[in-house]
Length: 149
Image (cartoon, helix red, strand yellow):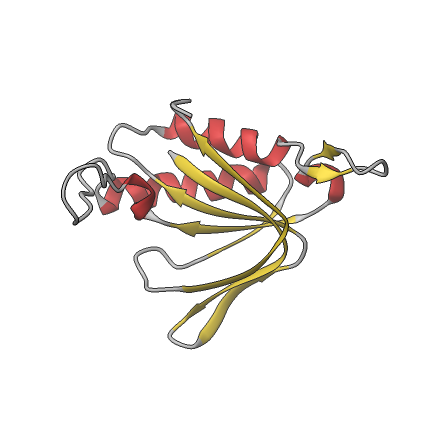
């Protein structure tokens, strides 16, 4: 699984001009699922993201997690995180998981984040979405459950 994690002051998702999800301060996560991913990847990445210390403490150091600040989490599925753009001009999505597996692991990731004590909202799987956010910092991290980067 791959995630783009953004520290945000607020974020929201609209589908067909309707806001379907919105959070205040916290993290906005764009989540991609690969063909080789398992439930273990979903659990690993959920725990990693929830406990990632990327919020500032009283001294201005990134030392607090989402749990520490009692922040919220917005999760948006994004298969394009597995795009391979190395050859030609059209991306290949061969490494992205098929929709059935991707949806299952996306939902497991969301459930695990909630189980870990975070208020979670999410986009709509396999829908065209408009994601709006205020990236604070800006702080953006890339994570991969296979630890390739």
